[in-house]
Amino acid sequence: MPKPVLAIVGRPNVGKSTIFNRIVGERVAIVEDKPGVTRDRIYSSGEWLEHEFYIIDTGGIEIGDEPLFEQVRIQAELAIEEADVICFVVNGREGLTAADEEVSQILQRSRKPVVVAVNKMDDHSMHEKLYEFYSLGVGEVYPISGSHGLGIGDLLDHAVESFPKVEEDAYGEDTIRMSLIGRPNVGKSSLVNAILGEERVIVSSIPGTTRDAIDTPFTKDDQEYVVIDTAGMRKRGKVYESTEKYSVLRALKAIERSDVVLVVINAEEGIIEQDKKIAGYAHEAGRAILIVVNKWDAVEKDDKTMREFEQKIRDHFLFLDYAPIIFLSALTKRRLQHLLPAVNQVSESHNLRVQTHVLNDVIVDAVTMNPTPTDHGGRRLRINYSTQVSVAPPTFIIFVNDPELLHFSYKRYLENKIREAFNFVGTPIHIIARKKSH
Image (cartoon, rainbow, N blue to C red; front, side, top):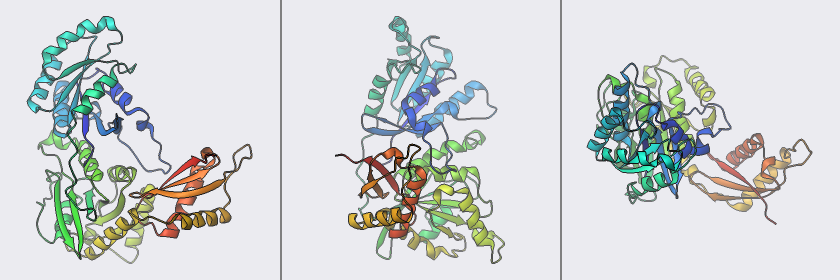
């Protein structure tokens, strides 16, 4: 079940981004150990009362040269299309405006749950201004101050209550769920058809012609799979197509439901920044990953072409050094036979559990070969014990004398040694340092 989506909408200068940052907290500033993971600040994950959700700041969506209110209208409509709950932000100091009323009419037609956040209500003396906003008639009204954090808790209490109820997973435990992500026109739908061996998905050369996420179960060599094909934008027209980065949310939802993510790259066009951005979401979500270079038939090749292209991918996707690369053509089906065996392999790695005593032997050997670091005061990291605590992705806790002594470079060294020892292919590995309790 993918996380629900909370979208923040409203006219400019009402404090949408302040509220977004307040709800997201430190998550916006997460620093990845490896270079290359870029993020869009208008998307993030939030958490409230054990409810995890995606949050969108529509103010960060650039619409181009449209007039100001037209931009607000388009942002609101895009949010309605994607969101489970909408947070409609208005400015309590300025009072109700005609633009607020127009946005509220758009929201009313959506029939989505709406919570009205009356922002910049920094003290109780201003609360008498609240009543005019009830006339909007779109949802419960809450006084808040984004800059001071006042009232955010009550607002989120109401929002999470309105999230859709979690549905039971329709597929068996052994089913491998795989999604195909990538920017428009890399050949995702063609690849789905090639995998299935039939024309299940409409294929077009126009970017963005896949409309809705399509789940397609199938069985091959007694293994059950589900292909989750990410949807393009449902609305047509130049304005909507220019908001391509908004459709990243569709990829996020598909990633959330997947065991294995196929990051599809167009061999003709090469690698662009958007490819890295989308792949970064799959990496952060801890999914097993395969990099699939499609349209390989269209590239002029010699004996060095594949090796050179692979090196380019490794240079650009430094944070995916664990992901296998498959070159194929969905159109001609050349090399397609390598895809599902690779999916099986990375899925197996993603769910691999190793014995504790063997893991500790590997760690001891690693420390013998490369002794643990010391800090500036001469204190040395001491590793007492290691154990695996979960799979999908494989997660290990290492008990040490002081977690701060485990520098990220040594952590990476241990990760590589664990990878080598147990052949963890195509899956991220998480290592958590904990202080040994006495």
